[in-house]
Image (cartoon, rainbow, N blue to C red):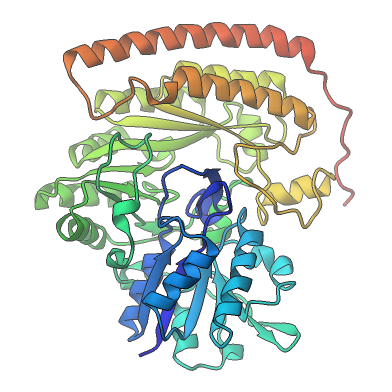
Length: 503
């Protein structure tokens, strides 16, 4: 039987890699951060098993393997390996290629490939490597099945294939459109006991797994990696297929919390209502959270989601200024709609997580502070301020490189929480200062490092203590924003105009 090792590459030293974050482009977190499972590993394993192959998964991040320990584990678990597949991401690509070199030395006769949504954007870097035999451009499932099945690599769309000292690019492969055809992910091949749900989703060690009910996002915001890795076409699973998997996770794995990883869970609200109705009709008892846009949430949808077990909704605000939203190709949502939907969720017992981005094109001191002030007053359950980050492959990357803020081949990004490219109005250092202020409010006042933020506790004394903490945090945060307006207007000077590239 054809033996395939699917590997979540080890974290770089001193970090924890979350390759599922940022639309699969990945981010790095501190060394002790809980590991999060990349969904494409168990999906790929399920597809290959259905094709008659024998996949194994080694999650070196969850098992805290070094490259040498990974080599030992492969030798023990897959002694007759025919194919090695290494999952990569934007911030780990250089370290992943070091891991690839280690694996190639240990298994010189085994074909070694790289996959992940960032591969098409990192072709130039990948072509300089001497260890890889191939890389997969796009969704890996069918590509690997055809390759393992003996098909001529040069005829398989979606491959970057080494040929002598050069590479053959077989071109793009169309995304799978019928997601109901895909088998359920093979979580039995992964160390699911090692995964811990993020604190902003629930508290304590609750058995959880992620799910994907749709892929792609038609909005195409210029800073977002999702359209790059999953496409602009929204592809979705049928309600029955979604609820079948939910029931499977609950009954097979004892899951008590599901985290939907769709870029746009409620793009079709009729579909969401059908999912919720089926959950209730089958009597499935599981908490779940999702991510979407608030303008794709009607009161009827929110009520149905709450009844079906929804405990949290994540959504992007990014900026409260509609001009800035339009400037990054984001369909504008005005502040009153965010306020209305957050309050509606609160009434239904659904927590909310609001995302903001500091330093987008067009941002200035006033617009950034307006967004921060709105975030304070929004009273979402959780809040996050990231900084505008030029992920390789996104239009924001092209915008930044065209203005000389980065080089065209720049890709070394750790996370959306570090660094700044600057913009037309603000120097990078000033955006970093504004972001640090926003992060101070986020961590110490609004999120309070999770103190008195336990969503699973509802006792009278706890509720009152939390309410008092919320009130005090809000008061201090508002006072801090008032101070910040005076301070930053006094200390930040607009940068000299940066010319737009000539046409």
